[in-house]
Image (cartoon, rainbow, N blue to C red; front, side, top):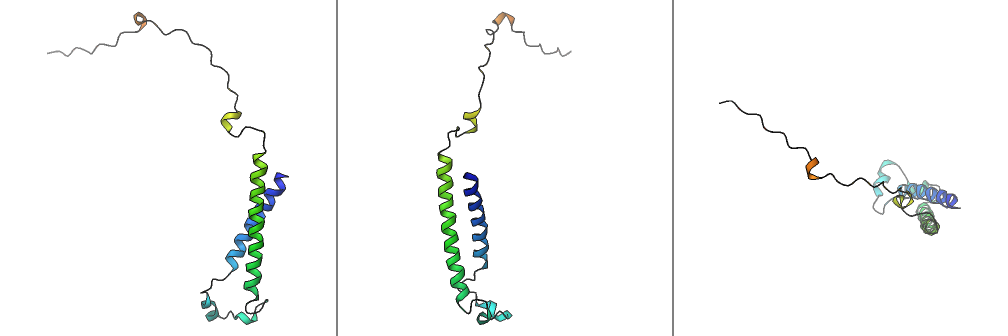
Length: 115
């Protein structure tokens, strides 16, 4: 189930990005100067804007709902939430008592400098 919702989420995100990049801004009339007549488009002069806007809204809703579904599905997970919680640690073996001061080696002496 998670995989299906994840695929829907990724596909809706990719299509949403593509649709947003296809749309013209409100001040994008400079495109008409390069020969892209708006009346000769597939949807007419304003038809593509309405179609792309509505499709974007539908895909945004699908994307939003799939993200909510993924959040709910992953919150129902019974596995540990963190990698550190899933690692089983073995107790460390007890070390011997620290060495006594008499067993600590003496620091090396500085070499004598001849005069």
